[in-house]
Image (cartoon, rainbow, N blue to C red):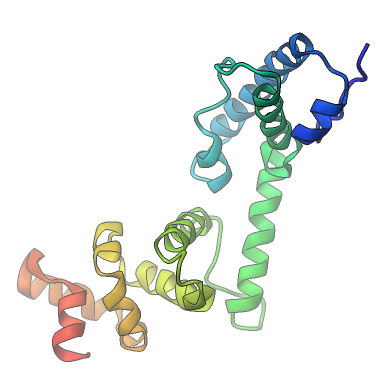
Length: 207
């Protein structure tokens, strides 16, 4: 009889454990129920906007693959989820708090305050994922510029659509964007109507 694998096992460890394909399937079925229950608890706790939940929100369905190696990979992925700190309510809340503390220490006022909080940290995580996806070939643009852009977006109440359609302009005019006030933006929108685009204004006048 094959030894029982530890939940953090890799696909290779599972393959070498002596576990039969039938046992792997049984273990997957057992652990997938546990994982889906955790996702349900995260949802009911109001943590659906978190990057971790969004990454796994589809849940873990029945195995739709065959072959010992493929099943081992699926079981290893399930193991990684269950072993992650963020798969529990307390763990996810703690990881979000840690991220807020780290970001405020780096981008805060040096006196314990900072721009990141429970209300915007999930939007920030989502923004950073989209930013990395867009600039995956240009990672030298790097995090500081991305953080500044996110904070300007939040302060000036830019829509996601406006931001990503004009992100290159915003990056080019990063300092000008940072100096704009929300009153400037809202005032110009009121004066010229919905046609007002911050990116067009920046290009034309450089603020």
